[in-house]
Amino acid sequence: MRDRAFRAGCAVLAVLFACGSHDPAPSPKRDAGAIPAGSAAPAELAARLLGEGSVDAFAWRKRDGQRAFRVAQIAEADGNWPGVIAACKTALAADPIHLDAAWLLAIGYAKTGALDRVLEPLALAVAGDFGKWAAASLEHPALGEFLATATGAAWRRRVAADRALYTAALARSVIVDAAGELFAYEPTAPRWYRLTHTNGRVLASFVSGHRIAYATRNNGRISVGAIDLDTGVSTHAVPMTRAGGPAAIVATPSGIWVGQGPIAKQLAFDGKVTTAKPDRPSGPVLMISAQGHARVARLPIAQVTGDWDDRGTASAVRITSTGRVVSVPSPGVIAGNTIAWSPDRSRIAFVAQLVDQCTPGAATVAAFTADVATGTIHELARDSRLAIAWANDRQLAIAGDRGVALVDGASSIPIAGATALAEPSFRARCEPETLIIDTAGSDDEEP
Image (cartoon, rainbow, N blue to C red):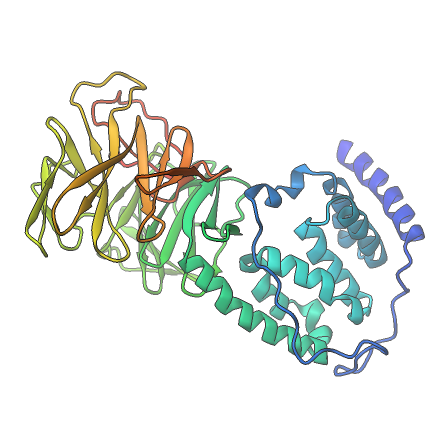
């Protein structure tokens, strides 16, 4: 009853929006290559700044334009495209960066034959969330007639050029979690690029080379998604496992391998799922327990050896290229699964447990860097849990209880809005067995 009442009210609003709109009625179907009078396309379309300046910019569902956008969605379901246009324009008037409204407005213009009006909202949506809408803008059936115009051809070239810019930006970025979604954060700009669209349901994730695997959980069932940082292509989270059983996830060159007992599947970067061999591929693995606890196992680490115990910790490690031995003050131990090489291979970073007797909530772990040539260590942060990832040759991204910061030894710069890294967090082994898991996964519980 409530839904019907809402739809009825929205229908009235949609009619009012349509009555106040100055958009023309649907025009006769044009020849595929025709350009509307007075709108000759430029040879090339100007580049727009990709991504957004803050993570808050992506929270349009919580802002003033969302109510009008819901009206637009109902009009879309009813096939009322003039109503869609009017409601989307109202949404954008209230919130000029409501990217969902911009995308749907472009579709509405295409559906009503107003091809000369498609470009502006389409470019707004794609620039703001390139990963979601760039490919869709070249494939959506409603945009076929637009793409056949000279402007559409210029748009294809613009998307191709922007893809190169986008993937270059991803390569300069650190992957962070913000309220259950993964983003690439480019520190030098700074810019945010959204990578997942799960309504805040990312349970765990990890980065393996230029691949990211992430998992969501709903009704006990694990869904897995894949992100290819080389191309900027990502998939939706696809249901991959049954409820109640542990799962292992490995990133491979062709996609994401997911195993659960004797059953294994492969998720390709085009979203297709196929049956896979049950033998787990080599490489880092994200383990998710039947209870939803998660950890990442990365050992062995290239050019680093240690006398690892059954939890992947060691009192000292040896850098094989220089023979230097790295250790932390006793009784500290190095968490091998957190070791990461700097991009220029001059340093390693790692998290270490500092004590063997823990006080709940105390700062019992620390993040360190070690110079490969000398073995000298530098402590950068302490907390009750930590995750690390290199942002560049100089800065280390460190996530703890108070969020994420970029640290270089001389300064610590918070990343506003980031709550975790897409890397395993590590807690001291003497913490209680009952575990609170952060959305980026945890490295301290067996599945």
